[in-house]
Length: 220
Image (tube, rainbow, N blue to C red):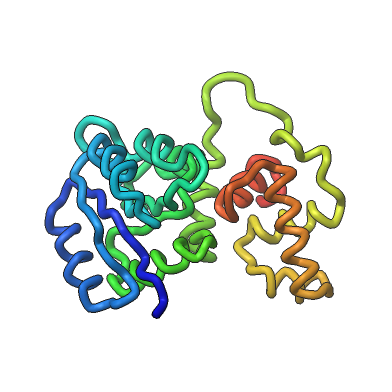
């Protein structure tokens, strides 16, 4: 049997947690191992229960989801984090992605889509949906942070011309297969380029590669 994906639900709204919990009860590959209503509880339970995926709200009393995400994802063997947010008014998503989140969920998404997203993240990939995700990242990436802004992200000078092309396409939300087709290379070669970009740009997953692409000005 396929091992279950162990999920920790973190949201200060009990109804949100209850809805996910009930739906996941009908999914044999998913198991809720704990629930938390604050960032502090999330950090404690993540250490105690060692889930595979943490579904993390952003706005919570006390420690918010951004700070909790940074703590939860630190260190080897850390769980993956999906940030739960509201696209129209949540201005903290970009910070959460910087803190190590592997993607985000929008609260008005269909529940089945949320379950599919949990599986994607648990598999080691990141949630970069063309359209919504790129628009969200683009909005927050365009907002300068306080202090000096570097001319390029660390390690970009080591990126080859071909890798820069691949990074640009990753930033536009293309999959490895789509990148291979666009650049007329094999899927294995595209995957190898992406793997090297992970190393050169110190990126945890494709979400962080998207951020690097926006920071470098490769994606308008």
